[in-house]
Every structure is written in C-alpha cells, then in structure tokens.
Length: 145
Image 1 (tube, rainbow, N blue to C red):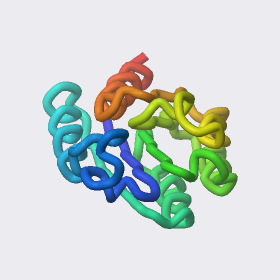
Image 2: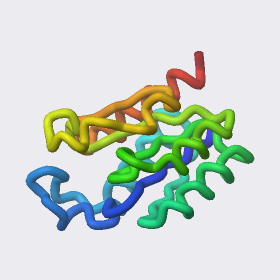
Image 3: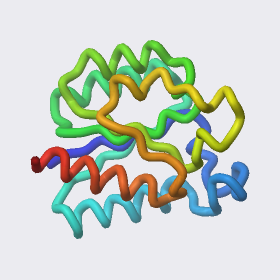
C-alpha cells in the first residue's frame, strides 16, 4: 500500500511558526515519525511532499493517480480557497483525507470554511501531530475495507 502525504504552504515552518498552535516539532521530524509508524504498524510506504506553491500541489495530486492508493493532505491556507486543488482531487480516483494540526473551527472565522472537504473522504483536525497519525490509520482502514 502506497500513501502520499502532502503538506501545503507554511508547513515547512513547523517547529518555529506559532509553536503555541502548531507545536515545536519540525516537519521533517513529524514526517520521519509518521513514516516509521506507517511501515512498522501498517506495512505502508509513505511518500511525502511539501510545497508553498499551489500548482505544484495540483501536479502532485494528479501524479499520485499513477501510484498512490491514498492521499493524506494538510493543505494549509489553500483549504479555504483553492478551487484548483479541489478540481485536482475531483479528477482522480484516489481517496484523500484532509487534515489539520489545529482545530480550524475554533480559530478565526475565515478558517471555518473548506472548499476541499466536500471532495475528500473525510477531515481530521485539532489533534496536533496526532491528526497525521489518525488520518493514516483512517486511510489504511478505509483502503482495507
């Protein structure tokens, strides 16, 4: 089983960006822990991709249709306005789980709306780093059912 993890804009700043919201763990530390967990617990291969550029994320989603069984995506700010990413998700036959470190519904009003959720398998938010692990567990359960 192959799963793609996509992290959107500013997630490369984890560990230094607003640690009171996003924690002190860096993205590379989080990805390393999640990759080990994916392999050791589920026998899953996890590839990761991060970009601050919307078009690169669109391309990563489109390319995943050739090899990925599922996609976990923290789209960052693109959650709230990227019709291009939404259309990319809609154009492939690979399930996507949207995930967020913070509880976006407990934050600023503009963060309450996702243009992506309707085309995703589900949404996991508000559990800090554990949102990633919960999303992986949920994707594996979905793919095995």
